[in-house]
Length: 272
Image (cartoon, rainbow, N blue to C red):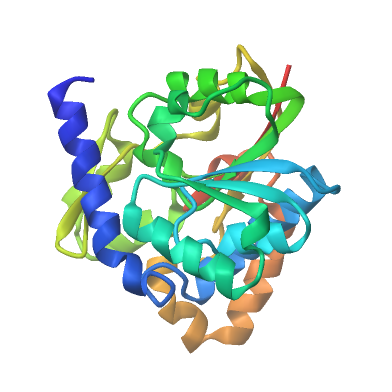
């Protein structure tokens, strides 16, 4: 691995380690994030209706892990951050699902460390963990190795074109911040006084790395008409208006044009 890539990955891991103790609060799980998570869960449920063996890529503090394990799935939880994995371990024990949860200190960029082939029914990743992976093509190859034929991927990825963000930074003349999502490669994003190296994607751009081994089933925007999570004060200040717009967002976010927009996008793929 080139030294520059290794250094960026280390920066990202240190940033997430630093926020692990309080990431379930306003920083990583405010009310807007909870709405996005609920949408992800609905797609996980329709994609994996029966108890399955699943791989969680970038499990964070384990909210998705314990929810899926509580439904009867066996989940292998992976994360590059030891701090996040510890939060997942404690949460799984507290929720009494630890017997269905395996934890591996493995980043999504190093799935080659997981032995075996065709051992998972599916994999999922929520809220942009895969934006920190330096080589999505390598990730696609490892997912193909680890999934059974017909296995599914359900990913929530941070997108390039977020209408709310464009309007927000235009109104504040934040030209430098406005350009971040449109960079062609990895860019530094500040978090807790540290740096998370992030790459942003359009849905079809992201899918190109997977198209040889996976067929595209569906994709849709997340937070297309409603604001991104860092503008949670919009929901708290105008709760009725927000709920109305969120319902419209969910009905229309899979439409052409709109499905290419949003703070995140949700994409479902199936192994050929």
